[in-house]
Image 1: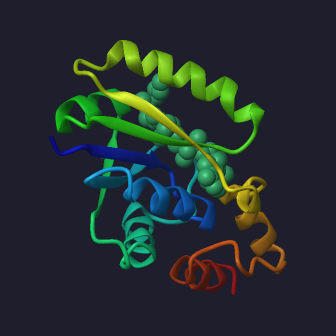
Image 2: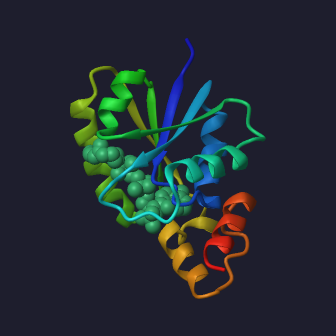
Length: 160
Ligand code: COA
């Protein structure tokens, strides 16, 4: 049986922390879809298309990655596509509280046997968030090594 997984997020932009989760999850599943959530309540710097482009560039070395986007409830998207698993990264104990809540709510909404799978973030990236990287970049701070090259170049360009 082929296993298809989903890794969803805002990815505004994708960071090396996200990429680390994607690389590790890609060997666990036959196919991994990385999907950008369009969340109207979260102010974003990059368009959904730009975020998808950054993800495609960063994952070009992996042959089982699909890049997509969706609007609305994650569970509706999962039910529509029939994903077997939803991958989430845990950076710190603080992530656990909200992740547990989301996983349990989603479990209630899934119509199939979709499981939420948690991967521990590599400690090298545990302090990174897209917002923090954007904030540092906006003040001209050093963000070298925090983002894949394509996302890095686009972010530097935005704050020129
Ligand atoms: N490395 C680096 N950064 C990471 C990371 C990792 N491994 N994992 C998470 N992050 C960062 C992200 O960049 C993000 O930073 P930001 O807030 O500065 O943008 C932050 O941690 C939170 O990430 P995440 O928890 O993945 O949030 P998200 O907004 O990217 O995505 C969804 C969350 C998509 C899973 C959730 O909002 C969702 O399901 N939305 C759809 C609506 C829905 O179904 N709601 C009901 C849920 S029960």
